Amino acid sequence: MNISIHFLGAAQSVTGSKHLLHFDDFQVLIDCGLFQGLKELRLRNWDPFPMDVSQVEALVLTHAHIDHIGYLPKFVKEGFDGPVYCTSATADLAKILLLDSAKLQEEEAEWAKKKGYSKHHPPKPLYTTEEAENTFRLFQPYEFDEDIYLRDDIRIKFHNAGHILGAGWVELTVQTERQQKTLVFSGDLGRYHQPILRDPVSMKQADVLVTESTYGDRDNLFEDPSEEFAQVVNEALERGGCLLIPAFALGRTQMVMYYLKTLMEAGTIPKVPVYLDSPMAISMTKLYKHHFSYHKLRDEDLSKESIFDYELFNYYRSAEASKGINEIRRNAIIVSSSGMCTGGRILHHLYHRLPREEDTILFVGFQAKGTRGRDILEQKETIRMFGQEVPLKMQVRKIDGLSAHADKNELLKWVSTLQEAPKRTFIVHGEIESAQALQQTLTQKLGWSNVHVPDYMEQHKLFDNI
Image 1 (cartoon, rainbow, N blue to C red):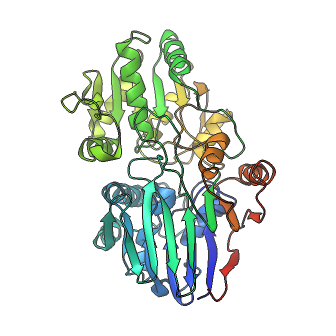
Image 2 (image 1 turned 45 degrees about the vertical axis):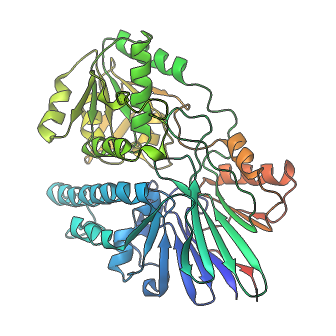
Image 3 (image 1 turned 60 degrees about the vertical axis):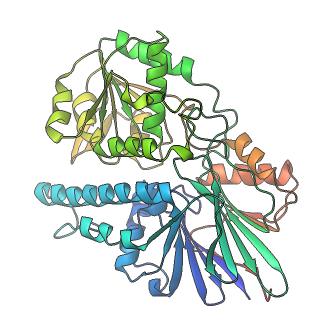
């Protein structure tokens, strides 16, 4: 058997994860993500898939973030009809996220048509809600540590990656008559010692390792964020305005809620209303109550009230209620998605609050190049929204302690559990500076050889005639 890998996304960038494996003529795609951020990346979403989609036998999803699953409806539309393997939590989350992704694209196309700022005539979404729903029949959910046979000689297992609810790193084992080979895909790796999710499970053996590098160039990012978080909240409320927190509906929002409740109960920050303005985040939060085995919030006392039922948390689903938040001028915290300000209800909050000096925006997650969030973080004078330039006058803050991604030391801790160095290591899902920094760390600190940062569309032979 000959084995090769083709990097079709998340190569020298942090979005669009797609890694195509060839086992002779049998093809398996690891992740099926949407490109986000820079326009040159987003345009790739509209290109035909670079391979014959109908020849892909199976799809494996590491977790439910859109940059790992968001291309799936288009992939199915182009001809894929095989099984989609993932954890049960990932399957439930993916259904919510894909419907939301389709809805946002339909709304964006309709808005572009109304305002006339699209170069396409007429503007169309990448895929529709109906096309997103058509993918659900393909999901085949499993739990961590279960053996899943793609065929008799190819087996995969999901192991807890600690990144978001249901996120798993993938152990793929190929067994031939002569030998066995193991390929490991990190997906996105989470942090250690988190208050909600469990630590990433250690590896033992990998002939080939494909690892993320989002924060591969940053050390010691993630000390306890409580003190810094409290300081930002207190400063924001003392200015006489509101605090706006763009947060990914999945993972980051629930972490923000955990810290807000904890700090309020401790008297470290004032008890003010918190508005969770994201129908998707509300649905995600309910899944935390359903998938208790994937987190540790009720490990000690099953009768304990969920943190998400806190009396100061207000859940807003309707658009009318969401718009009403714009009238609130002070002493409130607004949590809304999307986390990089690329879509969702956060946009109309930004539109109204960016010009307000007394309001504060707090970023609690990574902001990719080319996103609106990155532009705000870099404090550009104006932010383009709805075809207009909106002046940026609100206060801009950022804390790193809530990130769902491992930093360099934590990535190093995870890979150091291997009994011996992989024969081949590929560093993906990171901007070029981060990927190269991790490459240097693995080479110099661990003495690994054959560590490579692939570019988009690169293909590599992994094994010949095994």
